[in-house]
Image (cartoon, rainbow, N blue to C red; front, side):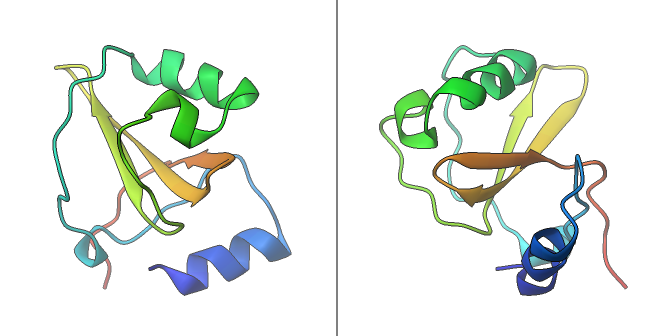
Length: 92
């Protein structure tokens, strides 16, 4: 889990974050028929467990939605909040 990023978010919320890619690995691949925009819009009104009902998520995970041209990532803060990832850095 990216604890530093979470603490920074709580101190000064922004529109997006940049977690370090080296801290994450693929957990599963699922096709669920939503574009990144549709997914993010649904998250305004629903909880993550409602939008993707057959999966369990914990805070600190990253969801990646690939439209075939560009991958979009969302940081799972909680079941009711996902934050767009501005860039997926490789860390230092």
